Image: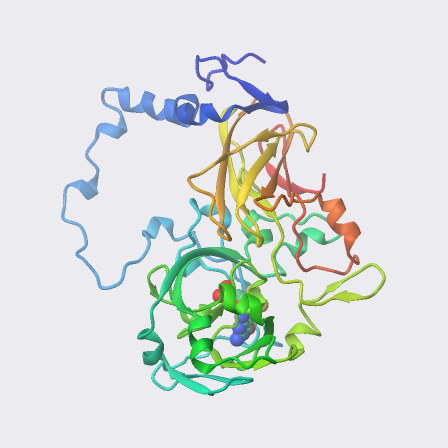
Length: 429
Ligand code: MTE
């Protein structure tokens, strides 16, 4: 098919890989290529609807309010939350609707949730954080005490190690990118460095591990090595500028950048310095990766190098042939994202996507690439490479590394099939 399709621009399109992938430079003129051209036509129609003054322009609108809400027309943008569980009161997870969002920041109301025993309703005036174990001077902090310490802000992703576990299952689920990969969010977190508090408590030379426990009904606990705790771990008090939400651990949570979400203990109440890990139930019976020989890996902390295309993605439909933007998210628990490649032919040929803005260490990175869809079936994939040179594996390579029962730390390449009718579905390619 030629490039002078009704919805393609008159300029010569530079194809950079199979099945219609175009050069990044065409991102600049995407609006000329498709939907934008159709809008332009309707604006130019002299008496067209775009020139009629709508009802909301003829009367004053609603006044200011104390706390904002999304437009009622955007009410469908919600977390993907299952019905409450009768057997696990308060437990479960809700997922970020990655397919309905843009940029890299997750709004607080849409940050994914994973609770083992529900969200405690904590009065910050009554809450205490104790630091003890192998320290010279045990300390207790109130919320007010912590607010008085110097703070730092960082944009960081948080991913549950169970994220994308469904993609390791035997059949490809008919789901959206949020439904499959939405135990992933990214926010600007602000708080107090743990090293500042540990310095005050005086860590004894025998201490090599830091154990943390939450004040929720699950008393969730995790252990991390002391060197990580001193390097970049902090106690988060703010999320995207406001106090962290109850779902995220109000009034305070541990934040362990780049590592599996489970170690970022919410509703943080106790930190103990120790000479070995505590072997809490949350690091023995769960959050370990089963290997083919029946043994399990414990303490697999950094999240793998990973990317997913968020549009077009599962359960979406392409309504017209022509140029579309392929966009998605990439991240790594071992640094920043150096490169994202995209394929439209199931991994036979690849083209480099454009990275939006700067690629931040341990944060989500947005990528984009223009794609000319001419109505032929396609399989869209993305492959991330991080600053340490780690390359996202194929699904098969990931599966061969672990037992078929393992659902943790899945970072295999995601495939979305586009049918000749433009329907997009999750497939195993
Ligand atoms: N901390 C406590 N106290 N209780 C919990 O249930 N869930 C953990 C971790 N911290 C949990 C917790 C898990 S499994 C994950 S993935 C992250 O919190 C999820 O953080 P979020 O709900 O803020 O997204």
